[in-house]
Image 1 (cartoon, rainbow, N blue to C red):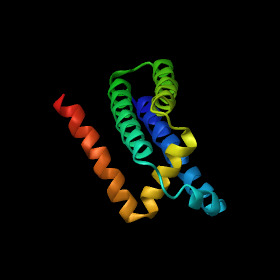
Image 2 (tube, helix red, strand yellow):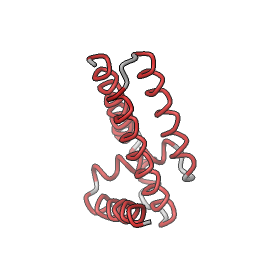
Image 3 (cartoon, rainbow, N blue to C red):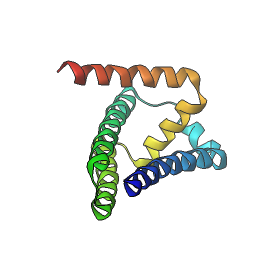
Image 4 (cartoon, helix red, strand yellow):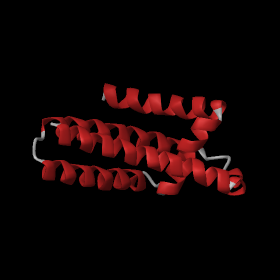
Length: 130
């Protein structure tokens, strides 16, 4: 069980590193982010879909790790979920960099965050109803 908790902490650290990298990149490349300051409605809708995909994959991973007692299986699950997350993001027509930049901007721009989170909530609601 302690190994499983460690695997879960490792996955949380991985997501934290991705977000930290996005913040670091934003500090080093503000001009690049400024050029991408406006996102099309289609791009933001794709982000909302990818975001909910990632939430679902993370929830699935957490549930599986919780019942797994085999450390090797936990490691395999961790690698598998990361691959599935990357595929989900790319499958929605986004690059990992675009996804990370949008996440970063939601953390620094309250108006943008409100706009994006409204789309995310619409996506959640749409999935819940059908």
